[in-house]
Length: 448
Image (cartoon, rainbow, N blue to C red):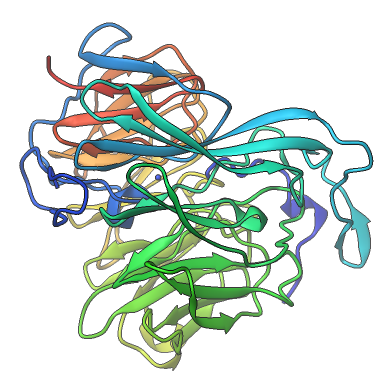
């Protein structure tokens, strides 16, 4: 397997997301009462709520707009009447502080856009009131030097937190996994050591499963990569599985079926684990490129893919053992994928988009192309991943525009909404509202 080359590390990792009181039971059905507990909700980016808004501007259908301190590309998560997100505030230079030396193919390598390790950083978890937008508390979980650089276009607060309604769990790579209660009190911290990512920063988000918080921690050379699960109540390590997979930024997904499968995507291997024990269940050929977009799940498949330097897609049937590439890969595809944004599986179809918002729709079961080349009406660049509900797919551009696309086998742009501020984070949907993080604010969009 060819290792990373300099040409493979060229763009930013930007993030590269129960109307009940805290502690109530999670709901995932229709209506205006569903929580959005983690990255892309439950990892899909699909909301089954009804009545979510599909039209807004910087003044129309804005319920509130709250300024945010610092910079972050993590997505908001919602539980009951609480909204959580993370942020990073850059401070003064620290004399003598610098990033570790990175090597690629045996040669010292520093990406021209790597920066940050020479300065102090304050990493925070924020909690806002869902109905008013008031910041209820902001808690500093790290204040000082950081281990490694990040891409200049990214943030030290790129991973999206996750919550079970009791605690909120925020991951900052080498700076640790932190658990706080809903009042902002720190409960525990788990440290996994120094995790080098070629000076690009961390993108993978933690995943919750049956009382475990699971983190995929792949390092740049693959020698020390691992995936780990800690007890959600105590932070104590329950299992750890080593992986010979080079640095990745994708968030794993849990497939539910006859058995649960925790599916991870990487350059060298796609690997599925038992999420309760860490035992490897199956593996497949890796995406052989930067593993940044998150896997998609549905229709009995997990769809893994990459967008740079190769464009490559595998749809893998669940339930296999050993190497399943020959036996369980149902279809493959080699175009239409993005470097950073994830695609979406919705209504029996998989929708991919490029970083310029060009869409491709394929049948999730067969891989049959329904359309490709679907375009948004203006030139745009995309970092946020799409969101789907009510037969619509929303694409959010870095210019702050949201393009409402009709779901189905014909590409149609229904409308364009704009907030006039850059959007790098994937939005959340909960309680009849969209929560959109722009460069400087968190917005709540909904019918007044």
